Length: 89
Image 1 (cartoon, rainbow, N blue to C red):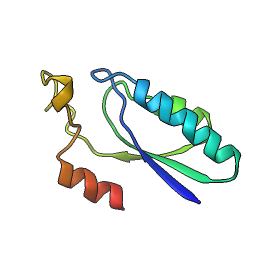
Image 2: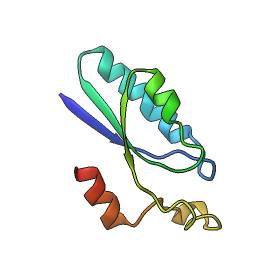
Image 3: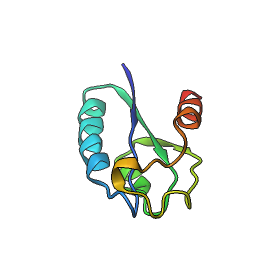
Image 4: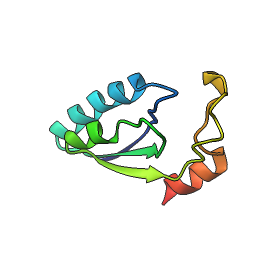
């Protein structure tokens, strides 16, 4: 099975969600699934940590300055439509 995990981490939002997803990705890979991450390229991302587990990461171009003072509940690295279009590639 091919699995894509869409999750972000960064200086503003932290990395707990990505680390939990990484645990699932490693477990899936270890039983034979092909797993990739799709993440926004924002400051402080955990890409090196993901890739250290041998999981390939596809990077979405993000507007890194747009969310500097936004409450975490409304944080988005890029507009939903742009996110979907980039992820679809």
